[in-house]
Image 1 (cartoon, one colour):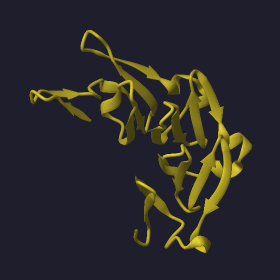
Image 2 (cartoon, rainbow, N blue to C red):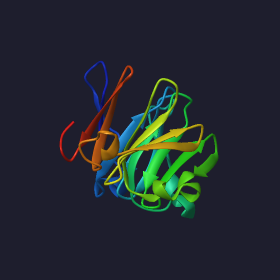
Image 3 (cartoon, rainbow, N blue to C red):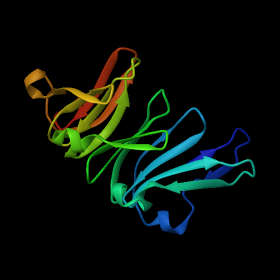
Length: 171
């Protein structure tokens, strides 16, 4: 993962040897210049320091967030949403909310996370469609019964009021 500055200088953001052996699954940048990355080894938050160095927090150092991560996403309020082998979580300030403990459907592999303009969170899943979360509550699951070509959903893209979904059988 490279950051290319306006002067053309390239900065390798994942140059720590512990990260080079793990696949990058997802990344998200918030409005405070913090970069969250989902790696096969866990979730990390990298922050630009005044020194030009990057400091990082390893969320996976907590036994509650241990394990392989699949997706990360900052919503417009700066909350970090992420999925790992346990399910869907979000970090609100310093509070970790484990939504999968309240909604067992959110234990399924979540492949991507996006937010709508009203801060509704969409989570694509591998085999179970799209989960819609609003205010920390699972409010709907969208599946082939609702018109998706497949319940294997890989990627989400929000464009205004439209949502594009990459599935196993097309967009």
